[in-house]
Length: 126
Image (cartoon, rainbow, N blue to C red; front, side):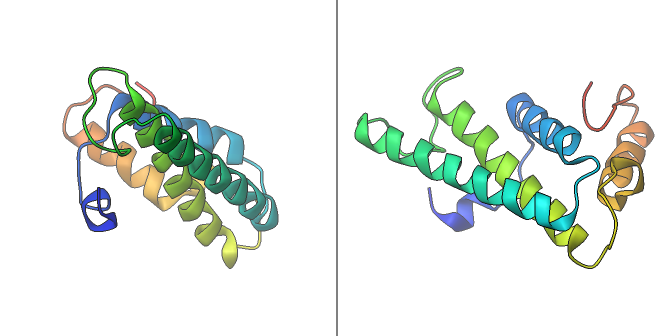
C-alpha cells in the first residue's frame, strides 16, 4: 500500500477507533515532551510490526488478509501513531497537559456523532 492510499479518508475500523481511544486515555495529563516520547515508542512499534510481517512472508500491511489478520493490528498501530502525532502537534504550543475535554478534534467528533444519531461516545468509545 502506498502512503497516498494509506492516508486517503476512510471509515475507521473498530480496531482503529479503539487504538485512538487508548492513545487519548494514555495521553491524558501528558506534557508535550511525554507525548513526543510516546510517539517515538509507537513509531518503533509500528516499524517492528512492518518488519515482522515482511519476515513472515505475509502480505504487505494494509492489504486485506481476512478477518482479524495482520491488517487489523497494522491498521490499529497506524491509527495509534497518527493519534500520537496529532496530540504531540496539539501540545507543541499548548503549554499545558493534554485533555480530551479541551481537544477540539475530539469534541468535534463527539458533536458530529451526536448530530448523526450515533450512540454517545466517550472519547470515541461506543
